[in-house]
Image 1 (tube, helix red, strand yellow):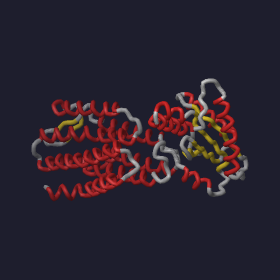
Image 2 (cartoon, rainbow, N blue to C red; image 1 turned 120 degrees about the vertical axis):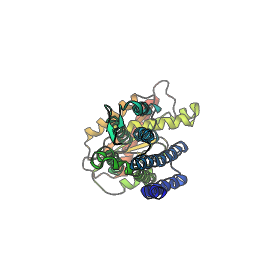
Image 3 (cartoon, rainbow, N blue to C red; image 1 turned 90 degrees about the vertical axis):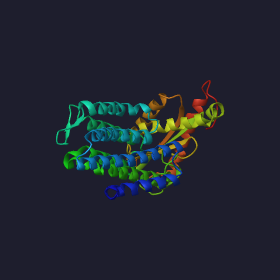
Image 4 (cartoon, rainbow, N blue to C red; image 1 turned 180 degrees about the vertical axis):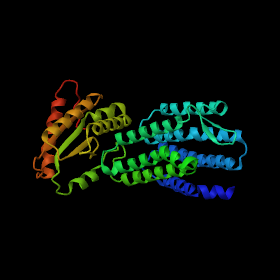
Length: 359
């Protein structure tokens, strides 16, 4: 049995081991996320052992009660693992994301005695109960939620969408292949999820060089790289500078200041489309580069940004520069946008109650 276990799970073990080694050497993830990743690796390893044991007992046609317990664990673990992935990769995801998975665990335990989700017939074959497709439905819902959260926090560039699409494809296979390959799919489920996560993690490592670690926005180096060519499709520049960040840092601490910057970044991402790229180029300074935009598009974008900001307690000064032909030099556009932004900032600080801090 040991030989079969190694043969069936060797690919999964190798990838999980590589995953753990990379996590040990990573510098761009916070400690809490790394610990959750380790827990996820351990869960995938244990799950692969449970699946192997269940199918081994089926082949031996022994211990039907134990097989039912193992089936309950397998049906419960799949959505639980995806919920944990959401909890790990999704920023500020509440622990309540586990509630549907916990409900499924309870139903699967009940099914051991009632067959409401699954049961074994007299020949030891799986039979679905009235809720037999519920685990697959829950996996589909969780997978859709994961993809939505990752896309929502992305910068909407193809480089960021492709890895999410890969994750989506991997999880979708978990909904389709069981009906194509039958029960044998469970033998490759763990390695499928492991490889999908590993590829996404490698993508995160590659992206760390061009992203700001605090906000997840593109960084200054990415801005220089994006504007170094003479492409005429980049025809608008929006400069944004937060008002009152120094006051927040002085009065509430730098943790509150970081929270403010993260909130602003989220507002900008929500307001922009795939034709606009958002960069954090300084402490509280942001730039949005617009491609193939009309001046009306730029103004509407600024309006959306102000609407998003109005939902928070923070305020920003905004200026922009537009070139209909796309021939305007980027430095010239920056100068025009900066002058407009500074004027907006002075108007803000001229109002009673607004403390005058540059930054």
